[in-house]
Amino acid sequence: MSIAVRESEPVETAALARARSFVAIANRVAGTANKLDLDALEAQMREVLGDRFEGMRTVDPDTLDCTVKSIVADRPDALIVVGGDGTARCAAKAAMAAPGDTAIVPLPAGTMNVLPRLVFGHDDLARAVSQLDTLEPSFLPAGVIGGEPFFLSAAFGFAASLARLRESMRRPRRWPEVTAAAGACVRASVHALRGGPDWRADGGKWKRAHTLIVALQSVSRVLAPEEDHPEPRRFEIAALRLRSTIDALRLGGVALTSDWRRSKRVEIVRAGKVELRIRSSRPLVVLDGEPIRVARVDEVTLVQNAVPVLAPPER
Image (cartoon, rainbow, N blue to C red; front, side):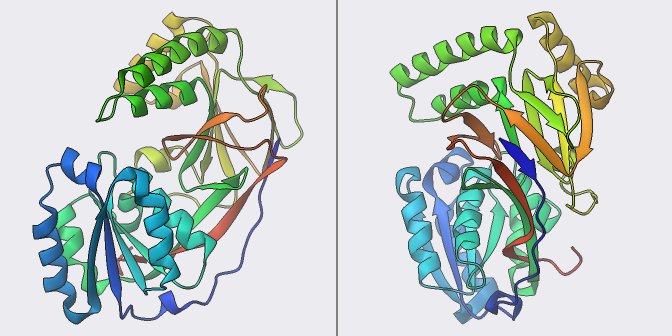
């Protein structure tokens, strides 16, 4: 599997004009977890947007993907997304598959809110709703692996098992799934300490990492999306080398108390091309925090102007 950079030209789209129609979709689980009053939120959107707001659809996670695709197929100028980063990624993926028709507006209504913070520059939901009438067109870059896009980072190795366990713990909990995920996590931790994906940057020497993170622009962009980051013309790769559980605990301590980049167990590389060797026909990877199985592929591409979004003019 190789990772290579490909640039794209900005797409001239209807989303680049002032949006005349807004549709909203809300992830019911995200709303419940954050104690959102979705009826009040819908009323606030209607107050800000007036006749341009065509209503909000509230859906369960199981029907989110098909509902988003259905809305995008109707080609509204803008799709307001109420949920976490997984919900925002679902909408961005649909918009990317049909570029030029619908811009997304990811509201900060989840836990981390990384994608909304990239767009709005903050994670204040009330403030973001008040800004809906002032938004202007922009674009988000994306990476693509095995046909699946990511807008922040892709992680390989032990991170996938941890993400799977986290997802299984979300409500409603199905304890057989939690037990299976926990067992897989324990097994993966043993394998991870023995070795993870092999990788090399720009044709250099092959190395091994227990967890490998490939980020758009920079890994720091995931941790601090409000800050300015380099143009996405290269990937930043973070390779974690952990020889024992003690190393893992030490790295966690460094991450909490100082600059994790200074850890002796982390190697940071910027590269235009990275090759990977993964011991699985359908590897489980983490795309923007979500564990997803992808087909074995030969390359991941970087698309600079992949998804139309609406953002505050100061951004």
